[in-house]
Length: 222
Image (cartoon, rainbow, N blue to C red; front, top):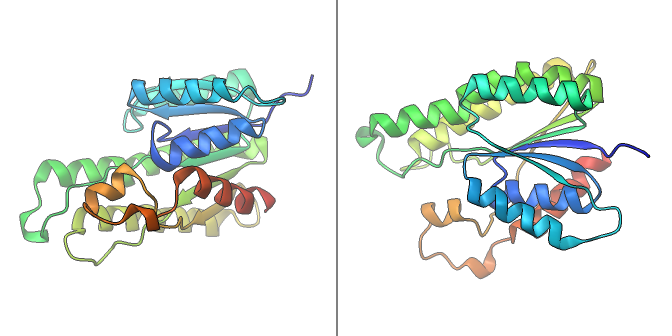
């Protein structure tokens, strides 16, 4: 029996991450779904099981925080021991800092944005790179260009730093692998966006499920 392709989705309990995990499972992948929110992961698992599609893949739920270095290191070791390598890493874990003027940023919000959006990414890349090399895999990051916009100081700056790091990794590995992709999703009808833009007409926004399908069709054909 052919072993299914393996994907790691960090930030898989809601929004784009959950939609990507569900779409991948529907396409026959086995997905290691990482998130802090246990309830969100269980709901994702229920949706995947309800698909009941011929050839559908499955999930391994990994309820943990991407900022916990020891937990993530143990997870990567477990992936290596069980599957050998990864064919895809989709990194959607993000901290959406409350909007505030730069002169009024709360220290706890600034610290959490840096810990989740940039430090965790910097720690995860060295852990996951060997798995992607073995699996001839692809890493995917998702840009949200808010840097420099008013009231987006902590989120915009930390997200821009994350994408700058991913861009450096992309340039370094273009000839030797793993493949690194930086995608820019359309505006999504997600809880994160609702926090930033309350009262926005959501009928004009992309559904996470449809956007996940579009993004994966572009990423996986590469």
